[in-house]
Length: 160
Image 1 (cartoon, rainbow, N blue to C red):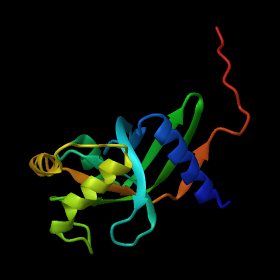
Image 2: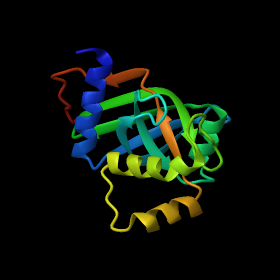
Image 3: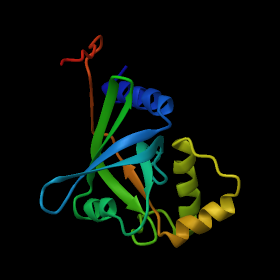
C-alpha cells in the first residue's frame, strides 16, 4: 500500500474512532503556530476529484485569516495513544474565498458533504445551509502531501 493510501487509512480509522475530531495547526503572521480543534473528514475534492481532508471554518476566524496568508496546514487525528498527522497545502471555498471551478451555487452541497464526511448529521439541512451562509462558513480542503505517525508497536509509558 502506498504511503498516501496508508496515511489516509489511518486518518479514517482514527477519525471515525474519535468523532472525527482533529487538532488543526496553522501559522500566524508572526510565525507562531496557532492551534484549534475541528471536525474533519476525508472526501473527494469538489473540482479535481483527488482525495482531500477537509473541514468547515466559520467566517472571520483566526484560522481562516492564517490560511489566507499561508495556505498550508497540519491536521492531527488520534485514537488512544495512536495518532496520524497529515500536512499539505489548502484551498478555501466560501463566500469570501471563491474556488476556481466551483460556482457559488455548489457551496452549500460542498459544506454538507464535508459535514457528513466528518460524521455530522442534521435533521434540517435547509436550516444548516442558512446557518452556514449567515456565518460565512468556508470549506478548507487540505491536499495530503505528507503523513506522520507513531511507529508500529510503539507503546506509551507514563513516567513520574
